[in-house]
Amino acid sequence: MENNRLIKALAKIRDLAEIALNGGKVQHTGRKPAKGTTAKAASTSNKLPHHIIGLRDSEFFKQPKTGNEVRTKLQATYACDLDRVMMALLRLADKKQLRKGSKRIGKKKLITYVW
Image 1 (cartoon, rainbow, N blue to C red):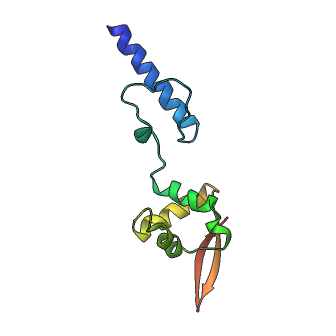
Image 2: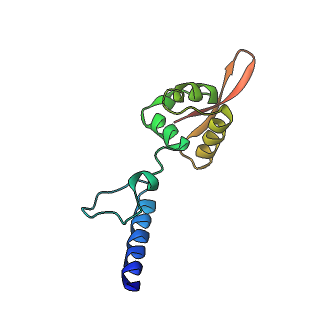
Image 3: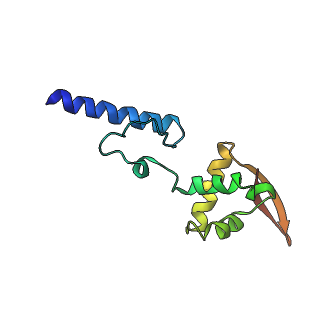
């Protein structure tokens, strides 16, 4: 009985390690995931940075965008506060997944993000 629990725990750890090493993407290896490990629970694709990366991959950031423009674009799929969007953009820029820039709107100089 104890051996069975240990084997299940090791299988769950292996599955979680594979998910972590694949950048949060679940790979289908032909075997069932360990009991208690679901693709939705293990996946991080429903978090704000992943939505922003999705916009980047769809070439939304080809032209410099402000945080408010990003938030407006995300409202259809992921509603959140402007502060959260700004912090997520800043963190993605720190991780070099976006680049920071600036543009003038009227007399104001705003921080923008571009890829």
